[in-house]
Image 1: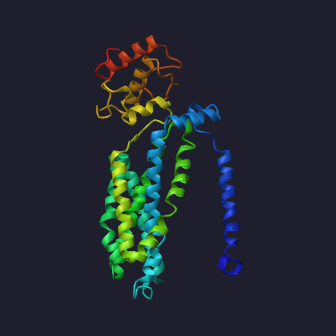
Image 2 (image 1 turned 30 degrees about the horizontal axis):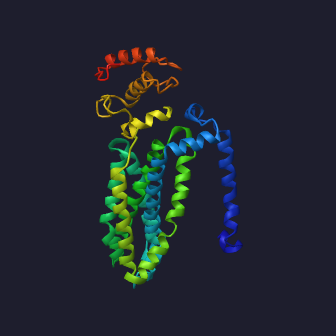
Image 3 (image 1 turned 90 degrees about the vertical axis):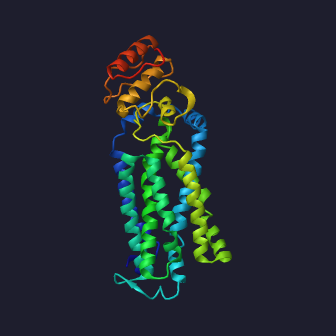
Length: 331
C-alpha cells in the first residue's frame, strides 16, 4: 500500500528506522572476548594476515562465488520461468496467483531447510551437511525445471530451496570457523562481497542458455553444473567445526589438516572433547616456542600468558598423562 500511494522510493524511507535501530544496538553491544584477544594491531597486520592465508582466501572466494550462483540461479529467474509455462499463470494456490503462491511456499521451505541443516551440521559436520543439501537440490531438478502441473512444480521448487538454503544455513558458521581469528570481522564479509561480483553474471548466463536451449534446459544445465562444482569444492575443502574462536592463528593448522605439525599423534577422532583437545594442541605448539596464548576460562589446565618453553613441555606432559593421551613426540 505504501509503494502504491507514494512510489517505490518510499520503501527505503520506511526501512531506514530499522537501519538506525541496528546501528544503535551495534553501538551499545559489548565487543566479544575473541575480538579483544585476537584483533589485529594495525592495518598492516590485517594485510599480513590476509596474505599469509592466501590459499584459504582463494578457496573460500571460489566457494562463495559458486554458492551465490546456486542461490541466485535458482531464484532470480524462476518466477519468470513459471510465467512462461502455459496454463500456469492463471491458476490459484492458497487464494493467490500461482506466480506468487509458489514463491511463498518455497521460501517457507527454504527457512525450514536452513534451520534443519544448520542444526544437523552441529552433529554431522559442516561439509557433510552442505553436501547433503546440494544432493537434495540436484535430485529435485527434474520436478523443479520440467514439472507441468502445479503439484509437481510446488514439490520440486520446495525441495530445491530447502536444499539450497539448507546449504546456506551452514555457511555462516562454516566460514567464520575457517576465518583467521585476527581478521574474522573482515574475512567472511569481504569474501561474500567479492563472491557477489564474480557471481553477478549468473542470470545473464542463464538467459543466454535459455535462448539456445529453452528455459527448462537452461536452468537444468546451469544449476546441475554449479552443484557438481560445489560438491567437488566441499569434498576437498577444510572444516573447523567446533573451533574455539579465542584460540590464536596457529590453531587453524590443526583444524585444516595442514602439514605443519603432522606426526604428533593429536587428531580429532581420538575421543577428546574439542576444548580439551585444543588445549593439548596449544600446549604442544607452545612447547615448540611457536605460540603464546591467553588462558581460556573453559580450559581444564592452568596455562598462563606467556609460557616458557620448559614450562610448556612440563605442562603438556602432565596434561597428556591426565587425559590418557599418548606422548608420541617425547616432549
